[in-house]
Length: 113
Length: 115
Image 1 (spheres, one colour):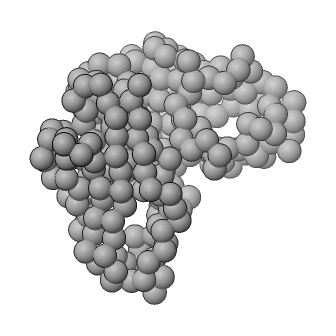
Image 2: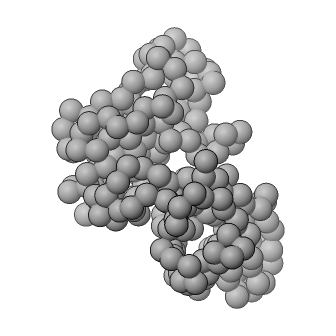
């Protein structure tokens, strides 16, 4: 299996622009997670899905952030409008129903200028 | 709520030195414990885990023992290599397998190994 695939790997945008991050989980995995990593706050869970349904979005910082999972093999995290403080590395991860271990993608490094 | 506390970094060691990265936790239930490693430019990878008290997880020369009495899960390696340079995260999960997410990460410890 190719693992969790995220795109793009790097994104540079200007304040106010819309940003869309993409994730393809490992086939057969039932859970999908979106995390944000910064030096100041460490690793934060933003939202997670089970069987394509959002279960807990309490970590989403503001209404500017939204996430969707239209099917079992694809998820997006959208920021609209983006702000400089959104600059971070965003990770997607997935796991099965029966194993707590989660598998991380390589991340998207977002820079908002 | 649950929490994980790791030693602050960066930790700088010479090659072949002995490594200990401390991790302590607080949890309401009987958690599983994990160490994840993040190499530069990559995502987190599971390094080892332990699911019950006194279990020892081991992988790639790293070990950690689940100590319920001291609520600790310290990571150790007898002889580190330059390739071990990475950020190490301690984490706990107090949900039964198949349940809702309950994974709590520590802030990470940056390890630098010098030749």
